[in-house]
Picture 1 (tube, rainbow, N blue to C red):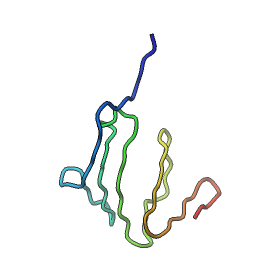
Picture 2: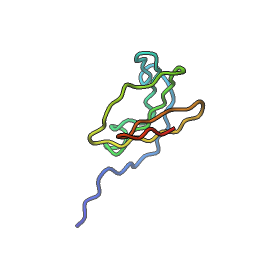
Picture 3: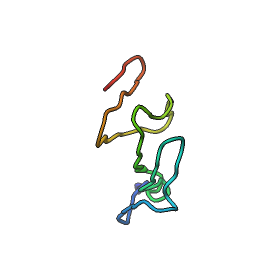
Picture 4: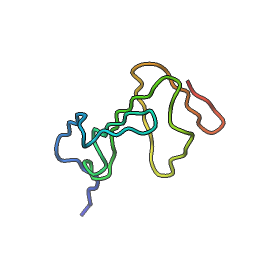
Length: 84
């Protein structure tokens, strides 16, 4: 018998509210779907950054990150590469 893991069985719809919106440095972060909501499969975060700001350089050991940039531009540093 195979074991299924990390299956989300209910639809998710997150909206900003006082319980899921945080302010960190100059960022506004809203957790739309948490790992708890998705059995640890993924999370979705809406992040608003002021111009010329962004998170400090960091490394994820166990997670992947995906970005959807609606306005403006970012420079990502991956190893020795910089990606616009």
